[in-house]
Structures are given as C-alpha cells and as structure tokens.
Image (cartoon, rainbow, N blue to C red):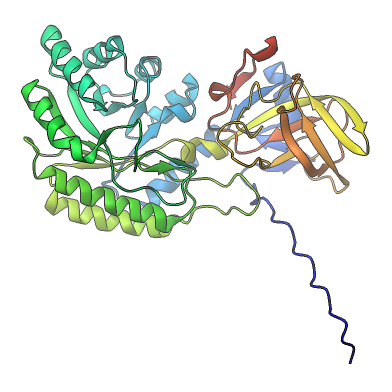
Length: 419
C-alpha cells in the first residue's frame, strides 16, 4: 500500500439559493405575467426596476397563513417607498411604518389608516413632529427632546400626541445584518432611561400607547429572531409595570431576512410562528389591551423585485470578460456591495432573456460609471451574453432605487414599475 497521501477533493463553492419566484418562458424571465423583453419595450427604457404585484400578495398571504391571527403586520415602507407599491401594501397589511414626513405623505396619499401608521427615526425635525401630530399618527419617541417638543406641539394644536417609546434594549439580535439595538445606538431610548421618559410623557400630557423594540434586521436564523422576540416581550412586560396607562401597542420589530448571497438559505418561518403563538397567548393575559405588531419591509418586498439593465458593451481585459451595462451602483447601490457589505459578495444575477441557456461563461458585470466600485457581478458564471441582452439582478425589491445615488455622475435615473 502506498504511503503517498491522497489529496482531498476540492469543496464545491456555495451556490445562491434557487430563485423560483419568476417563471421562464421561451428562455425569458416572466415578471408580472410579462416576458422580460416585451416588458422592457413596455417600460420604454433600461435600466428599470420591476415589482411583481402577485408575489407581493402571495408573500403577505403566506405570512398570514402561518402566524397567529391576532398578530398585526406592518409594512416598513423605507424598504420600498414607491407610491404604487405602498398603495398596494396598504390594502394588504394592517399598518404602515414611516421614517420621515415625506414617507408619511406617501402613506396617507395611498389611503393608509392614520390610526395604524407609526413614525420612527432618530432625527425627527420639529416640523415633522407637527405634521405627525396633525395627522394623528403614532410617533415612536426616540429622545427626551422629542417628548418635550411633542408636549408643546400638542398644546398648540389641541391634539395630544399619540406616542410609543422606542426602547434601545440591552441585548442584540444575533446573526442580524444590521443591529438596530443593544449597546450604544442612535435609535431609541436606552432602557435605563425609560422611567425618565415616562415621567416626561405624563407631565407633557401625551397619549402613551406602548413600546417599539427593534433589535436588528436581515436575519436568516429563526432561533435568533425567536430569542429577540422573547426578550423584547419580557422587557416590555417589565416596563409596563411602571406605565401610567395600559400598553395598547407593542411592536416587536421584524428582522426577517431573505437570501442574497451564496450559501444562504431561506428563513424557516415555522419556529417563529410557534414562538409568536406563545407570546400572543401570554399577551392575552398579561397585556390584555395590547396589539402585538411585527414590522417587516425587506421580507415583504425584496424577493418580488428585479433590477434590469441592458448590456451596451462586451470587452475582454487580460483574459477576463466584462459586460458593461447602462446602469450600475447609481441605481442599485446594494448589489454593488456598497450598502453595508463588509466583504463584497454577488447578488443572484442572470441574463434575463437567456435565463435557461446551457452555454455559460465566467464574466464580470459592470456599470457605466467611472469608478471600479461600479460592479454588479464579479467573475460570475452566467449565460453567454452580448450587446443588447438584459442583465437581471434578483432580490431587488427592497433598498434599491431609493437607496442609491441616482444623481451620481449625471447618468439618467431609472424607472420603477409595478406589474
């Protein structure tokens, strides 16, 4: 027997999770019932974002089917504030969460019930607080300054401001892409300052309704989300003991993630649904007047959208093929890796008009900007493509157009359509 060591077989590189939400017909992705090439003609230009309304409806219905009926679903419209999307979502969910007076206007214009709109954000201007009070929406108070301003505004307008205290908890959401609570944060009131805040609310004559706790976002680990919900509920229960009025509103945050990068898998909802069922049962006895709220943005809209950009040049540099497109990080900062990624990873990408082609090659997809950061796909195996073909970036329904520097370098803005 030979003593020569046997080399281990190379490990396969992790792959993107399958993207089955869009059908393929005659080699083309089908978005909102329309083949991609014809949809591009209908839109009249590239680049563009397209959001599939049937997928948005399915996502909300699917979540309602597994969660307890008493759990309210709120759409965090910062994920996608396109007015047509907000209008659709307003009719599907129980409430809308906004993060500016501009978003508040969109939500009200879309017909959202002011009683079910909440307004969060660490830097609310006085004029925004006045608009919120006048609109009779719930303000998630995030500082003692805000409480003081709201007291004066309430007196001037003759309307007691509806408020919930956004609490910065003393724990973090493990495994989340962005941590919104725990440790020093610009969001909310540190839990140890809540008694002072409650005194300020009471002395200011504000209408206290409850608490908002948001530990983190973009989490694919059900056990971490369940743990954060359990801790958030326990914290709210403890804080409720010192409240001058019963808790009527308890926002347990969201954090539900979607798979973007190689090796990531879709979130398992079953344990989360079981956990929320237990909390809802406890709340019926311990917080009998409270509505439990889950606030989701990305999870509702992220997988229902695509970004479409056309190849305008194909070039080779020292053996590497580059597909140059008419849009890039100026329209889709997230896909370029410059919106929170520490180590850049590829979003799932395909050639949308050749989606089932068997002939493939390793290429990089770059946008038209004069910066090496303008990269949509880095050395990725894609169907062989040429000038005129359509590059599609999946998982683009959230934090796309509105989260990107569209004025950068003076290129034309992209279009958004709901189909």
